[in-house]
Length: 160
Image (tube, rainbow, N blue to C red):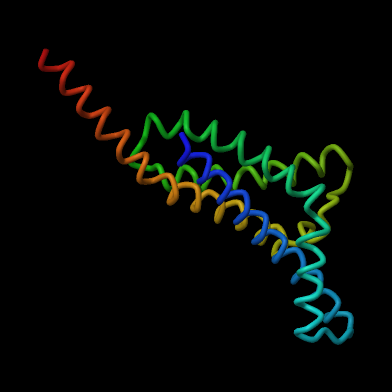
């Protein structure tokens, strides 16, 4: 259980950081396209600002989205345990995609400006995929131990 909590926290942090990096850098790229000079120091400063500035709004959204996605994914993955890693990567991807679509439907426009372009949308759902992969990798050892116990229990039932 503790391994799943660590895995979840690591997935949330990874998703948040990758999403904010994508958000910040794509916004800066849009400034460059408008002819505004953006140097490396400004990129770092903007990233630091966004990492802190989005904590109160975006981080809770990521937490809820990944929690729901990983719980749902776990139910499906029980049926197809050999697709565990792929399942959690897809769960993380769909969690962020569902948030983006839901916010867009509720507000009439997408409040996450970078997701209005294909590249921006891809950067955000890729962050969810990274989170899913992190969760799958961190919790893999516990999952392997559980599958050995399940296999031994199934063998004991069959023999006895």
